[in-house]
Structures are given as C-alpha cells and as structure tokens.
Image 1: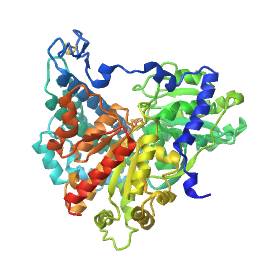
Image 2 (image 1 turned 120 degrees about the horizontal axis):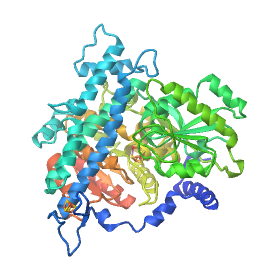
Image 3 (image 1 turned 90 degrees about the horizontal axis):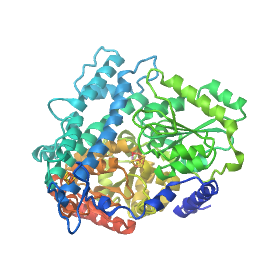
Image 4 (image 1 turned 30 degrees about the vertical axis):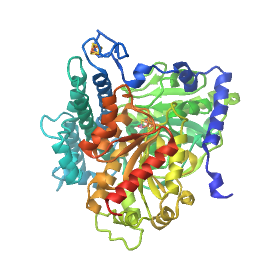
Length: 631
Ligand code: BF8
Ligand code: SF4
C-alpha cells in the first residue's frame, strides 16, 4: 500500500470513537460528549471573562445595563484579573510538578529507587549554577542541585537563574520591561494578591504581571521540571514506538499510566519488567504485562522507554471503554474525575497516587519516593489479579495504531543536524545547518505545535489539518503534549511522513534522517522549545523575535496552556491560537493580548478558529519575518 493511504484520518479515528461511544450508550455509561451537550450553550459571562466572584459582594457580571461590579471594577479589570489568575494557576501546576521532581532528586541515591541516570547533565547544571563538582560524590552534587533548584521557588532576592540562558537581547527586554521573574512562588502569590478584591484594576498592569508570572514557569518551573527529569530518568533519545488505542492488547494485562509526573509512571514501567511479575501474569492466563501511556505521561515514558501511547486528552475515557484496561494509574493534571464512575462500569481499577489529584471513587495509593518501587510492584500485582475479572463480552479494542519516532530534545536535534553535510558543527553543536536551510528558502521556517484537544472544536481536526498544510509548505514542525499525540495517532511522526512535505523539507528530512515533525516531549518540555529557539537565534546572531519560528496551539484547553502561551510571547515568539482566551468581553484585553504585548515583548497572539485560515496567518507571519531579515 502507498504510505499516504496508510495515514489514519480524523474520520477513521472518529469511527473508532463512535463504536466505543455506542458501547457506552448501551451500558448507560456517561462520557464527555454527554456532559458537553448538557453544558451547551456555555455561560456567556464566563466565556467572555465578565464574571467576577473575587469577593462575596458578588458575583458581579458585566452587562449593557451594569457596566461595573459593585466595587466599580469594569469589564477590563474583571477580564484582566480572571486572565491573570488563569496564568497563575497554569504556572502553579507546571512549577509544582517541577518542585515534586526536585524533591525526588533530593532523595536520590545510588542504591535507592531513584538513581541519577544522566550524570553529565547533572554536572553541567551544577557548573552552570556554580556548584562545586570536583572530587565530590555525584549524590552530594545531586542533593545540592536539588536544594538550589528548590530555592528558586522562594528565593528572597534576585530573579530566576535560567534567565541567563536566554540571549542577551531577550534578557534586556525582560529587564527593561520589568517582567524578569523573581521567585516562582512570589510571582504566583503576587498575581493572586493583585487580583484580590480592591487591588489592581488596570488591564495592562494585570497583563504585565501575567507575562512575568508565565516567565517564572517557562524559564523557571517548567525548565527545572525538564532538566531534573532528564537528570533523574535520562535525557530522551530517539526511539520508535506506537500510538492509538490499538496498542492495548487482548491477551495481556493492560495498565495505563496517565498524567504528567514521571516519578510515578517510571516506577510502574520498571515494576512491569520484573520477571517475577511477568511470570505471575502468565499464571493468570495473560501473555504478559502491557504498559501504555496517556496524555503527557505517555510522552514522558515513550521517549525514555519506548512505551506505547494510547492517546491524548479526549481519548482518556475511550481507553476505559475498550473494556480491556485492568488498571488506570494516574498522577497529576488533565485527569477526568469522570474516570472513577466510568471505571465502575467495567472491571478497571482506577488508582490515584498524588495528594494533588484526589478523586472520589478511586483507589488512593499515595506514592512516596522511598517506597515507590514496592508500591508500584503491588499495583502491578493488583492489575494482574484483575485480569480474570475482564468481561470478554464488553471488550472492543479498535485495531487502529501507527508507528512513531519520538524523542527529540535539543541534544538529539543538534546530533541529527550533524548528519547534514557541509555543516560547521563545533563541540557544543550548532543549529547552523537549519539556519542555512531557512536562509536558502529550502525551509521557510518552523512551527511549534502544542497543546490539548478540546470539544469546542472538532477534536484533533485542527491539529491534523494544520500539520499537513505546514509540511506541504516546507515548514518544519516541533510538537509536544497532546498535539504530538495527534501526529502519533495519524502516523505523521514517522520518517515516511516526508512524503507529505514540500520538496525542500523533504530533502532536509532525508539529509538529517529525521521525521518532519519532531516530538520534543510533554507540555513541561515546551521549555526545550524555548532553548531551541534561543539556540537558533544565538547561532543566527539575532533576537528570538526575529527568527521565522512561531508557536501554535489550535485546540488548547488548560490553564497551563495560557501560562505557556504567555511565556512563549514573552520569549518573543508569536502564538497562533485556535481557541479564544476568555477575555472577549474586554476590548482592552483583546487589544493587549493581540497587539499590546508586541510593544512589550515583540510578540503577540493571532486568533482564528478556522485551521486553514490559521495556517494562512502563520505563513504570512513567517514570510514577514523572513522579509524583515532580508531573506
Ligand atoms: O500538559 S496538552 S490536555 S496532557 S494540558 Fe493536558 Fe493539554 Fe494534554 Fe499535558 Ni498539556
Ligand atoms: Fe463584584 Fe468587585 Fe467583588 Fe468582583 S471584587 S465580586 S466586581 S464587588
């Protein structure tokens, strides 16, 4: 068969979903589609950002006859405050995830559950932070690095350490604009303080604090999360895996790991490889243990172990609906509480593991670094024991799956660029080959496609359409999170996908031996994208805002995504959104997020729900940057 015909279309994915939803209907199990219907139409005040309940005189809503809340806050103040709280919540989620990982590093040991897997990265970070490395035990260094990282959350003076990784022009912008982030917790607390009743009512001041807070995520919490995860579990390398529900197996014990914090999923993956447990599964009539991932956890374990990926955000219920999941283990973020009642309709054990995500109806096993491996083995055993409880009459596993090449952190991208002949790669590596290709017009530019899927638009469709069109137009894609998983499900994360590309991009993929969509990891790894853009700008000798590289989140839904979008524009990179931020009720806020930020950081949002129009806008944006650079 011609490869192009083997791409899984959105229609095919929807056909699989429809069969699973029919099963749900037959057993009266509720799904997000049912709840979405019940929630439609959505509250207009919430949608436009015009409802304030920041004090108990309210809630106050802005209407044509009530242009101010009881305290006098107008539409701009209310929408601006809501927006800033969203950024603060997203920053808190990513950064607290990083804090947890730092605590794991603090407890790392040679013989324990969490050894250091990338010692060189640890030493590099220690040197960057001027921590003594000579003659010291690697775990002494690890613990001091962990303490130093943890101090970034509450430091009394100074700004985030990682800001120095940005190019000097960017650092100057942040400094001159007064948006250099201080302690991570301080920026979140300041945002909550500013939006507390009786404080800031000025939309621009709220927006600026949003930029500052988001930078404490992108160049603080998220960057810490990525860095420490690599140190503990290894910097990802290129691997081949598979994706979509077809990775669940009929004759194996299926365990789904879902969420974001790899400290938990890594242990479950390791436990499932223990011979004694594999043998135990066989005594129960299964051929073995099949661990698969969902959401960002899937990205984490796929790029470090090649674990297969069952799907993205709106696929989480579908996994349970197959009737073939013995256990769903979750940690934090993007987990539907609905998984608890849904699991009860099947034999699936739904296990929560973090005090941050407690869900009624789940089995709660609080994961502790010291006992993590034993706990993971107990869970795997529980899943094996559950295998015989499968109701074979209820099982439907869609056959659809695709192979995928994953694991392109900056280190791997640099390594692959070495493959391009006539490159002048120095010791630390260089992005010059990609810059040369852009300058020559062989590549027009690059787009980072990130974010969730969302019932507000046809799920996965915008991602798919945008990816195809960009590739056809010689625009390289880097992807993370649930967006990367759309590419996985479709079969676009393969080297064969170069057949979809324009001649220039196809040639680059051939020379560098890469797929045209590079999987860079989970959403927390968008920090890697910031370093990638910084590296390209550095090797080009310009600021990040000048390079023909943009971000795109066509189907975002999470508060984390709003924080990300803000740090991306703070880094000087335009962001193209397919879902409108909830500030439409304020003309000032709409102006600020699309135009106002351009005066502060050199970048802003472009918003368009139509994927094809969004691609047009992206192409225009990239061509304008090229023209400004004289190429
Ligand atoms: O952090 S892309 S739905 S899984 S928020 Fe969540 Fe969105 Fe997926 Fe990962 Ni990111
Ligand atoms: Fe209403 Fe002002 Fe209280 Fe908000 S802070 S609920 S606008 S009175």
